[in-house]
Amino acid sequence: MDTKMFCYQCQEAAGGRGCTQAGVCGKSADVARWQDLLVYVTKGLAAAAQAMRREGKEVPNWVGRAITLNLFTTITNANFDRQTIEGRIRTTLDGKKELLARLETTRDLPEAALWDGVGDWEAKAREVGVLATKDEDVRSLRELITYGLKGLSAYTKHANRLLRDDPELEAFLQRALASTLDDSLTAEQLVELTLETGRYGVAAMALLDRAHTEAYGAPEISRVNIGAGRRPGILVSGHDLRDLEMLLEQTRDAGIDVYTHSEMLPAHYYPGLKKYPHLAGNYGNAWWKQPEEFESFGGPILMTTNCIVPPRDSYKDRLYTTGAAGYPGCTHIAEGPDGNKDFSPLIEQAKHCAPPRAIEHGQIVGGFAHAQVLALADKIVDAVQSGAIRAFVVMAGCDGRARSREYYTEFARALPADTVILTAGCAKYRYNKLELGEIGGIPRVLDAGQCNDSYSLAVIALKLKEAFGLKDVNELPIVYNIAWYEQKAVIVLLALLSLGVKNIHLGPTLPAFLSPRMASVLTERFGIAGIGTVEKDLELFFGQQA
Image 1 (cartoon, rainbow, N blue to C red):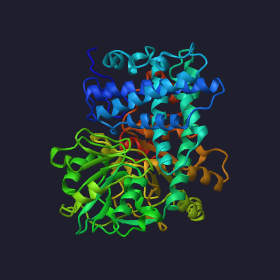
Image 2: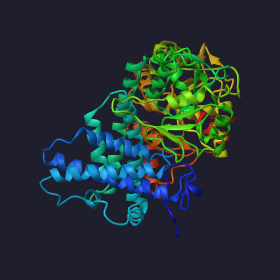
Image 3: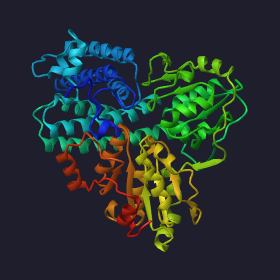
Image 4: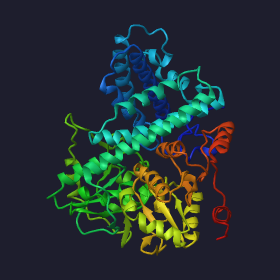
């Protein structure tokens, strides 16, 4: 097979098999190969750190931060800048050399830990990519674990921004990443490591949940404006609330409004962020509509994390990146030694831009994180016991460009009137503006927040199990019909599996990185399944047709 690259980590993998010439996401083949090389040297750094632990030596704190940043950098739609990725490779090689110098012996280390960067990087990148693991099933599990660790790293990195760390979590990440280099592990051992990754995924989401609520307060039920004001604006996309907070502080008296986009919508639910009067509203929809929405916004856009769509030339000079995000030709706002960032270039540019052009009007309601939903627990239990609520439908996850994702809009619209949707992530944009009504004052779409806030859905399920006096979470009247796109959805899936949740339906397609045998294992052990038509799935879940 004549391939310039091979990548199948996201749902849009070409042909449902993998991108081989260029990424559907927009990354070039050389960027894809450089990302493969960055993952390889990061695994080598993790293996060197594990060797230090075996010798009873303390692993430097910078190692954990470097690994989480590297993995976050390689998440789908995060960084398209080869120069930045090359810089991360060089920094990682230098750091690994420092660890190797402290070891008493390097005899049993894998090649990834020993590679010093000497030689042809292009050839090395082609050699160490996904297809380097020849056994299809072992490759499938190694990639499933790696993608889960990428998602886990994203959550950990956000918590780190708010000065929250978990040494045990970082140690696991390093151990698990190093294990993907271990040829002695059997498929069954890798399955168990996959579930362990899910358990630590729960810990990472809990860490981030605490970091967010301690910094900004518990999310509150809130109405968010989706129109546009008369002042110039800055649009913030991605996921990083700390970046948004710093920007809000720096624009306090600048005569500029700040708007959220896509996964930043839940910022409006936090008391510590909604207190800023110039946090004007949410502009636009899910990440993939960026070309049209960034065009009409008219002002600077700050991409804080992943979910970049390659920009049009017409607004490329208004697109700024920061953190793990990057795009060639766009200005990158770096973090200073003190952890702060200077957003004055955006602010100055915004002052000379026209106000955003309204593309919608009205309000949407959100803020149903676990604290708010559990405050309604008695009301919810009564509604279920009285029959007013027949079931909850978890429709969390990601949105994407594929036309097949219209299924989720039609499914939500066709759901029985006595069901309530629990959601988190940008999948909500498929149905959060539908007029679905309420049940006894409870909205039929309960938005817990970002994909980062999927922890809330797990907490809600476990607390409802307790409230109903059930022994098994699978006895709850909950249906799981989850959309996925990238690696943060992978760790959410693994987290749910680690909590014992079964019969999750995943779409619009099952991951290309699951080999037939591994897909069968997940089906048999956990009841994982794909989606069908709206009509067939309604009959499956509720015994009725649309």
